[in-house]
Every structure is written in structure tokens, then in C-alpha cells.
Length: 486
Image 1: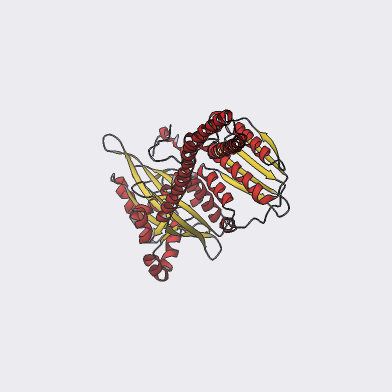
Image 2: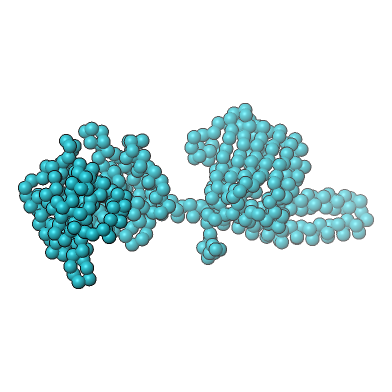
């Protein structure tokens, strides 16, 4: 028997769920935790001194008891050993236990005591048996399918997978069987994967569909489209989960490249606007101003009335052309946008727009932004504002426009509302483009360019609200050659 120095183990024993015994060097029971007491129906005192193979196991064959005795003798000789056994108690269904024994030695090599642990592997074995029963029908589909097929127990442990799945992730089947589904799930997708899986095995849903990232054995991300379903036992208890996994990495890469291409095209278009504005300002506009001065000088020096009248008309036309070119340059690159911010730029533009279109009343409710927005975000919001105002002028037949701009926490909100005719909003954005609303589609793309989104609220006869919601700082895209600042 072990002495009193081991009584502290009782507290530990009662906190673990697996069946745990402490045996003396001859293999007789010294301590047993509450899990063992519940399994056997015996108290500590009743089990003390009984060899492990003589425990009142129900349902064991004589061969099983002989095997347990052999396992204990191996531990008595200083070796680790184990055995699977199925036991019954008080009429309950059989419990399959994986029994393992580990001798604890003194420095001299003599045995201090032996730890025997039994792990309940019933669910795993029952699931494996269920799979084996249907293996003949399932095997052809399982092995030959072009997409991955994954089978997990209700705890998320992988029971099996087909060649397509383990090839997709670069693991062998045996390696995958040592992992659960979260260990091969990308960190950013673990929360949603865990939520959906738990809802599935808890009966809150019959199946789920998700696009998620797996982790390849070499560390790279693999995008997959996964459909998971719960397989039930005849008594409707959860048995295991089967998932179909399609590798969509190539598709996702193409989508990412298309998004990047669209962003680069839009940024290129913006740069072209800026270049054109600069060239118009530094070239034709300056030349026209120079010609205007020359005409003014001729007008002041000529003495013939007919010629003076012609020069005055030419002078007026040149001044009008100068104003038109200045307006175009301002539309292409508002001079106040970079140094003074979005608020002052919209005020300046709206004032000029109001003067040009006096029948349209423009009301402003703009928060001060100064330099709080990145230049890219400022340009995107201003272009959305411009496009909305131009659409109102061309299509809305509106008399009033309300423009609001605000900042909340980490996002900026720009809203343009009119009292015009409105329109029927299609259920797919492509229909907007087909119906000629290319400006709205372009505004959507601009909002996405900086990680935001565009909302359109409209009904025939009820006016329209265009609402752009974007992060205060654009972190969605960095052109080639520019690194993100840390």
C-alpha cells in the first residue's frame, strides 16, 4: 500500500474526467477517482487492494481479463502498456475504454507506483463502426471524387478524408487524423467556423455553407467552398459530420486580381484627370489668358469703332472660355481638396454649382474634416458627390438637394439626398449599368476602392438618397512600389 504522502492526489483525481487509478508496484488499486467510482459503483474502500484485472468489469470476456492482467504485468516490469476494452454497467450501453498504464520509477529504477488511465473512446469507435458499415457503398464516391470529402466526429476530430482533401492541404491522411478542423483553419476564419460547426452538432441547423481558408501544410492559405451536413443515428443523436470541400483558390486569386485591376484602373483614371487638369491649366488656359491680354491691348489702342467692337466681342468670348476652362480644371482637380479638406471643397463647388443652376436649391450640413481624411478617401468622396450632383441635374428633376457629411469613430459618411423623381432600384447592380446608370456603378466601385460601400435608397416619386460609408483612412490598396507605413 502507498503511504500517506500520496493523499494529495485525491483532489487532483476528482477534477479529471478520465478514469484514473493509482496502483501499487504489484498492480493492486490504491486510489481511484470519482469517475471510476461512478463507473464501477464501488467506493474507494471497496476497491482498495483489488488487482486491476479483478475489478468488477461487466461484459468482459475471459480473454479480456487475461489481457488486462498481462498489461498490468508489463507495467509492473517497468514498461508502458495499453488495451481497449468494452464494459457494461447497470444495464447501460457498453462503454469502450482505451486503458493505458504508466509506471512511475524511483531513481534506482524501482517502481514507486503505477498510473492507470482509461479514456472513453466510445463516440470515436461507434462513429468509426458506422462508417465501416457503409464503407462499401461510400468508398467509390469517397476515393474518386474530384472535390475533398471530410468526415469529422461531433467534437471536430477528423475521422477520415478522401485523397482529394489531403492532397489539397499537403498532409497525409494519418497526419490529418491527428488534427481537428480548427487546427487547419486560417486564424481569421476560426470564429465563424467554430460558430457554424457548433450550431450544426447542437441541432440548430441541418447544414451550412461557407467560403473559408484552410492552412496548407507549408503554411499557405487555401480558399475552399465548404458544405457541411450532420449525419444522425437512428435515435436522432448526432453521429458525425460530413463535409464537401471544393478548392476555389484559383478563383479567389482571379477575383483578387480583378479587384486590384479595377482599383488600378480607377486610380489611373484619377491620375489622368489630374494630369489633364494640370496640362489644361499650364498650357491652353495660360495661352488663352495671354491672347486675352493682347486683345485687350489692341482694343485699347485701336481708333476704329467697328474694329473695337469686334475686339470687345472677342475679349468677352475669351473671358468666357477662360472661365469654362477654369471650371473644367476645378472639376478635374478641385484646388481646395488637398490643402483644405472635403468640407471646404464641397462648399466651394456647391456655391459655384448653385450660381450656375439657380433653380436647384442646395443645402449643406458638413462636418469639418481638415486633414483627418487620407487624400485617396477625400478624392473618392468628392467624386461620389460630383457624380450624384450631376445625376440629379440630368435625371432627377429635383428642386432641392441636401448634402450631409459626418465622421463617426473610424468611418466617414457622405449623404446626398434629392426630392426628385426617384427610380426603381434593380435587385442586381449590373442592371444599373444596363439602364445607363454608369455613374452610380462607378461610385460603388470608388467606395469599394477604399474599403467602403455605397447605399442607394430610392423609389419612383420619392426622391433618392446616395449614402457613401468609408473608413477614415484608406487601407485597402497600396499601389506597386509603395509600402504600407507601420
